Amino acid sequence: MRSIRRQLLFWLLAIVLLGVGIAGWLIYRQALAEANELFDYQLQEIAAALPSEPFSQVLGSRDTSDEGIVLQIWNRNGALMYYSRPRAPLAPRAELGFSTEHTERGDWRVYGAIVGDNVVQLAQPVSVRNRLAANVALRTTWPLIVLLPLLGVAVWMIVGRGLRPLRRVTGALDARHPEALDPLPDARLPLEVQPLVRALNGLLARLAAALDTQKAFVADAAHELRTPLAAVQIQAQLVARAKDDAARSEALADLQAGVTRATRLAEQLLALARSEPDGLKATKTVDLQALLADCVLTYAPLAHARGVDLGVVANEAARVEGDPDALRVMLNNLIDNATKYTPAGGRVDVSLRVADGHPLVQIADSGPGIPAVERDRVFDRFYRVGAGAHRAPTDVAGSGLGLAIVKRIALQHHADVELADAPAGGLQVSVRF
Image (cartoon, rainbow, N blue to C red; front, side, top):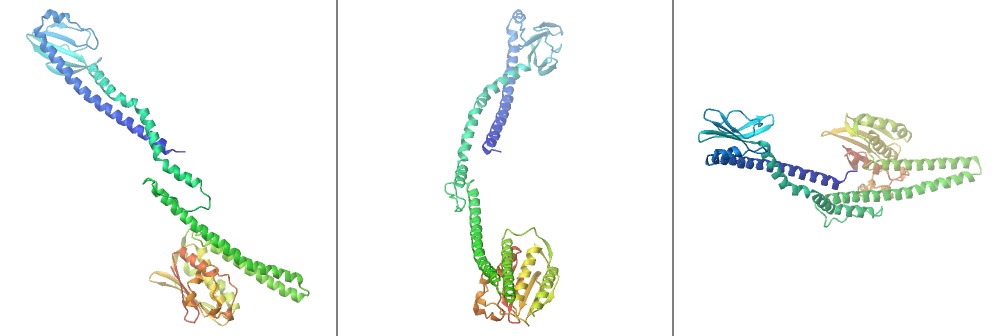
């Protein structure tokens, strides 16, 4: 598991080490430049001081140290008069001014000058200067290196202090009851933590809404299922108490009808659950023309048996992006409602047109319709139109879920559903994608 504190500690210490390394290199280069100036000046001073000393003293000042200055003296005829270190790998002739010689034993800084009647050459190993510059850089940077462990401890503590609000939020979430979905307090939180808490509060709000919806759905479903199941139980008892075949056949028919109603209600409940916002499958291009024709063909026998004229008055080519199964459920519910509530001898007209580039499905019937004051409420779950709608001639037992399912599937597909009066006097349902 990756730790933010460890990552910050690692990268901060790595950056500090890199900074110390760069600073040490810059200090080394600066110290080397100053050492070169100092030692070059020293070579000039030594050369300038030679004429004031007896030549015998110069000959006596032999330097056999590896890090010492090498001295060579020539006369004007080019004869070597003095060589302080015979084994030093320097050039056999003098070159006036400063120069750098590259030898097998390293680089040498050489200064040549005419002193009196002689030519003097002074040389010093470059390694002496490099060593001095390195010592200066090391003495400058070693306190920073020594402080690295203390810096690591400080970073560890500071980062832990900075992450303390996250631990408080985590503790508040761990201590919560599963059903406690009230928002977390976001006061006195760092700016970096506030977006996280706001996102969590938004998630909690959505979960609370989903949970309330689920609770209401379960309560309504249990209430609605109680009635058909009780009816099925009574009808089963009537079958058991039947005294003759005629009574038994009538009771069995009622029992079968009750089971059919309960099955239909369970199917509607499942369809409603699938039409929740998170119930949509992966979308694809759907041929709406073919789908609508297939739905009408499915309900044609049922409409004929009820004496209802079901037909397609217009079916233009149209395609939409969506879930074909969900769209089929929506269209089937609309056609089923129109066919079910239209009395014998009535008609149901189905059409598909493209208006302003948007597919428009319309299903109009000649049934009792829905009063304008109740058209907004019929999309609520388990709501049924009251007796004032004069539906006695075509009254059928419904679950009050059909239009609720239609509305949810339409919202999933970014479509609008509108209810209006049909030209034949019934209800016209329009679905505009």
